[in-house]
Length: 202
Image (cartoon, rainbow, N blue to C red; front, side):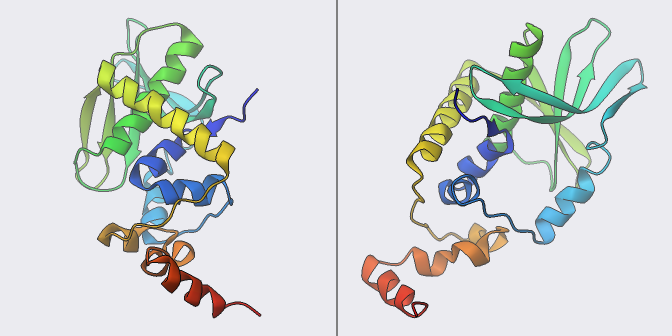
């Protein structure tokens, strides 16, 4: 049986293949101001339990898994409606904007819930902390296909143990693994990278 992957790795992979590889293959973890803010945003949602608000049961930090896809993790909030339907809600730092990686991570949660509870979950939402607004997401066939392909690619990445070459972007400087990845150096041509590596050889 293959090793299960964390749901959050889908977000990492679609943001940057190298970031996901540094985490999944080499086990790197680091923190910065953005991850600290994320911890604060998730502080309440990460407390396991439930509450009832306006007739809707809110399940917090619910562990989920999929044997078929080789995934596990937890959902920030699951809204259980009066008719028994489930509606996953993912908390994110930042203003209300559409990001493919956020959508795929939420869709993966829905796929886990569908397998666990044998119910159809057509949609969920991302709650954006800065704007305090939620963005509803429909789990279309295209989004489901993207999510399953991303999961398959992640398993292939883990099996290969390969670390993709960096591609420097402005967004790199916001990444918590920036000082580990060193994208300004590792994205350079091979001769430059080899010369830089020799500086650290003893």
